[in-house]
Length: 227
Length: 250
Image (cartoon, rainbow over all chains, first blue to last red; front, side, top):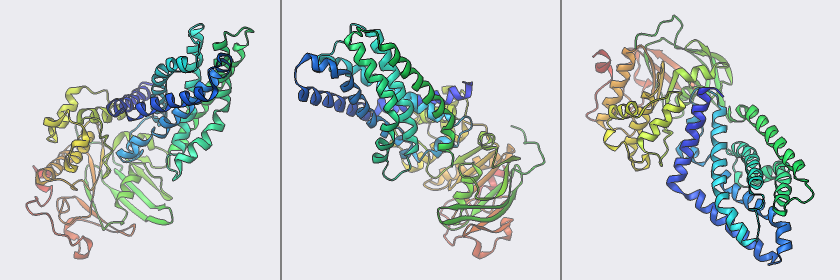
């Protein structure tokens, strides 16, 4: 990454995090919504520890995915309020900095959400992530990164559509299937202690899709944004 | 900054046309602007002034024709052009939840300048906003926001400055400030292209006036050669200096 790309990426990340810190609108809504999703699922499934343990990984990722949509929907909202993406496009340098900055802002916001969400999930769903905690954290980071990579790309793609709130999840969720497949299975195995040592395959799948999607999205992003 | 060397014009457009949806915003536009000059773009609403400025800032691609900005082809050199061209848009591109200092810091970083707080505050001081440097932009009046957008231009080294309705929302002091900046940029050898739909403002002090109507260049001439029908009949605001000519000469 050259210095100019790094500086612009940093500028967008800094600006978006500062705006979020000032308003706290997005993060507060995300935490409340994620906790509500987990509570409702926990309530519907009941207190059986075996069932909760079996479904816990999936439920956690459902909460992250639904909540992440709130964050993605707002990714380019601050630009719209400021007058549109032209405000970023009129500067020189790699246009990919816009994507990378927005991607990192989404990633950081989701990680902050998960720091709050995981203890809540541990209580509501009786999960035990502490046994293989470093592995659990690694899987969560990989899954969140994959979600942010694809989500930020599709949020940019749909920002000018009239029905973007509808189109974003319609387009995004099918594209996220490989990432969620790896993340849910790896998380479930990590929570269960992975007695048959099958987790490696899912983690490799997750890493592969993260790398492929990241390279493809970064590569073609200028085509999405240029007129 | 010394006068910018180089023989080629700052802007050269040949047969430029731009279609926005079903409408032709610009048609068969030929225009050549000398480096270091100031050109005022006049015409009624919808004449194509903003479209032309956005095209020169490479935010739009021409639908037909060819053009160069600072000797760089419009079609292929967007990144190089953006490094030399600054646009003051009517939209402002300011973030209401950031303070004035933070907005300028962001603009400087996006422009590729690793600036310190002192130069940012100096830019604020030049537009008369140093006393509200740490206030959020959403608390500013529209005139103060216009001044802040102007300060963002000052954080970058530019060769061509594009100003879209720079006088809108400004008070008498603000209008004078714009004229002084235009004069200063001209003295530094920079090229200024200023779009306005109002009569009198900056027109008589410009090197050339381009009259746009329905997307076509109706006239490109000296201010003294303008005909009565070329300008919007609206009267200039009372108390406003007639032009930036005095500043440019000073």
